[in-house]
Image (cartoon, rainbow, N blue to C red):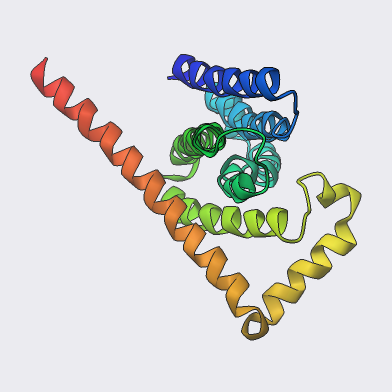
Length: 216
């Protein structure tokens, strides 16, 4: 799986390189940075899954979980880069649509793979039922993080660099939901969408695996 993720990401980067060569503009170069940020939580969950003995230490698991939670919204955030499609016209729209969508797809796949790895770790440590509850919470936090990144323009490291400003705006959303109905609507829709995407791909994978094993 990891090999095909890398191939898919490489294809996206080739599309971007082709656009830069043909147009002479570095318009969508920021997509590579967003994709790099999507790899951070994937790497954390991959490493933690390979060191499950370490994960059984509750303090260390909590530390890694907090670090992972601060970066995992970046994986799904790339979906919103489709907003940029109408801003630039130095290349055909069909090409830019495929370019941005390919990066968004890779971010989504990295996010789903990362969440699955973390769910497997939590299943080992705290049991299956509770890990599913955490999964639902994670998807809401992801949607919340996407809103903060896209509209409030904060990044993961602003938790350390601008904590008071960041948490001030977060509290405004949390304690005044009625005056932020549209914002909460966006968060809710994205949370449901990501949850459905995750469970669908997970169940498809489990279904194919069972079918393959049954044939053997």
